[in-house]
Image (cartoon, rainbow, N blue to C red; front, side, top):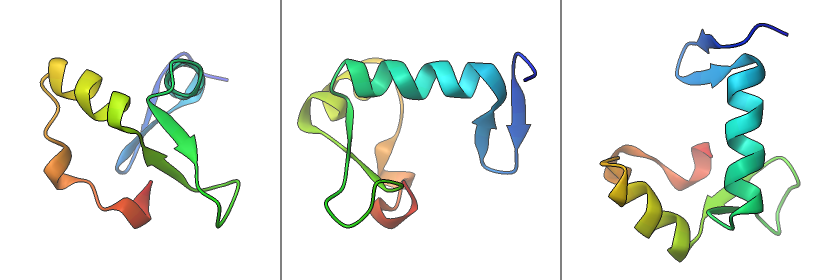
Length: 64
């Protein structure tokens, strides 16, 4: 796996995997009840991502 890789509209590679694992571990995102492959941003995640200066209004819930 490459350390970081940009794939269209997401971060792939090891960096993407580590970031995803950290977001899950910190409770920033969680799996939806519909599918183990779909995630939603939690209230805590919303607060933390906003602290990082991320504009979450550009994210569609279905796309996570």
